[in-house]
Image 1: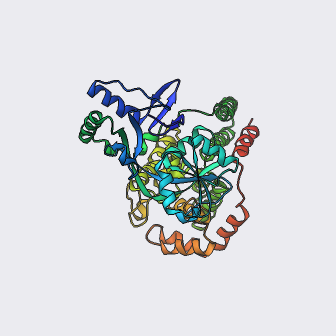
Image 2: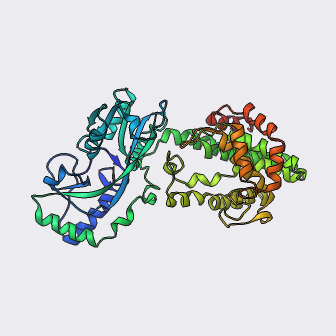
Image 3: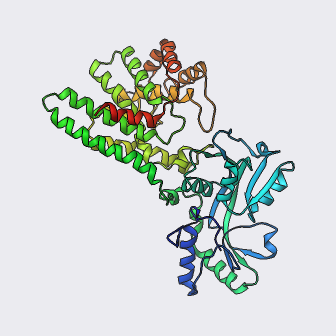
Length: 454
């Protein structure tokens, strides 16, 4: 038996009547070993439940295998509502949970003053959230994010928090099927399926349905723009400066496309160019290098396009494995700008802006002046701007709080001389932030860039 939802990632998804996913793959291996065919159903009588969580109430009727996956409970709500820090924030709330899931009993035992409502599927839970028939939908992180994405509700519903307790996912086999239970339990004991625990690689291609309207809205103008750009560059052979400006316009559009999925970006890209220019001027960087730093600073995190959004937007602390995946963005971005032949300044900014003065950064652990100057400059201003913005896991810091943190990292994360320059001119950096902190409509900016360069 599988769930009633069409998508329950990474466990299964249905496409054209065919099931795929982790639970389906393991079941197919079992089928080959024992020579007995398995039929996947959503309703009716069943011998084995594919996604079961061991609990005391179920043990009277079900035998649970050892877990083959592990996940945490998470909480979804409407985009307009706040984030939650812990389970006590759900007290006295109207909570939606999947019918028959252990989360119902779990929450019932902890939240004595809350109204807990069972729904037949996660999709029904999302509908009730949107119609305000519930305040929160409690489910499992990977499943929730997949259901939200595949129903194209990312702009209306978000994962608002992740609870601390983890739950192992097992196969649940009816006690009436004793021989089948013993056989499958014995086989799974020899499997190394526990290595699939919290493996985000399973989610890299998990969005199996696509919002074709959105794809067309973005991709067609990009193709048109690139085509127009090529024509204009060819016509501008005698005007190298114009050709160069058009090329940089394309880079800006690429950066905007990279940021379209980041709801708290605001004017970060614009401010970064302004900060970098100011710090470069105060540090007496030559004019040509200063202009290149300004142009390419916006591309510093371009490699994040390849990092799963559930990691980038995770509202709690990243695991070591998740953080290692995030760190890959510098090399991914470096490969991209290198293929575009944007030059050393762009390559250095993208690859080395997370290196630290004391050698504790990544990807190469460069130390001191071995870190290119342009990367050291972007590192300081990028961190300052990030501290000023509200993030998924914390609130925004004031200018003085951010300034103090920058000073504390002098000689550790940052070039001491650049920190001194930043501190001496800190009011000018504060002014840049305050005068440019309104959020950008990046889609509008994207089309504006196309229109203005026709």
